[in-house]
Image (cartoon, rainbow, N blue to C red):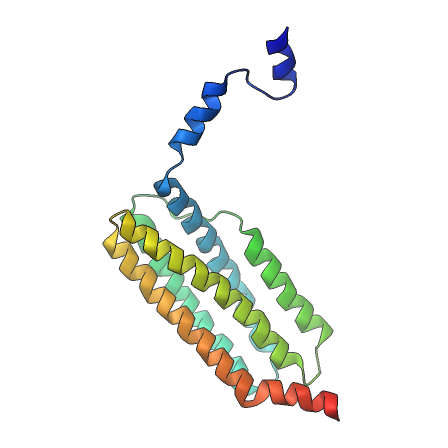
Length: 188
């Protein structure tokens, strides 16, 4: 009777099933799942960047978004190489984090369209994306090294360095014009 009741409640009645599933989860699994996550994220980002470029006010920010779209295409290619190195099919796994970050960017585009604060908001949204990517690539690089995927670690490091440089470029744009322009609008 107890077994029937547990099955109705979605329980298998066998604790060893859960232990076996837990034992199968290793750093290899975590690496692959996280790789699928960032692959999904990069593919979403490459589609979002043209919209951000069109929405930006300054030519410099438009150019930065267009440049990063091209870089992101290369990053996707590197991720595909990493999947090959580990012997897995390149595929994405829905990334709720990037969905939320990109939705915030869309809100900024909508709510601040036509204002002097738009570019500062777009830069902040883009940096949220960059910081997410930097975190993921840093972790994946460390795990690839631990797992003995040195070629994958090198590819992941290349992207990590690119993402960090993009973040620094966005900070420079914010400091050079966007933030002051947004602040000036409030002072006027």
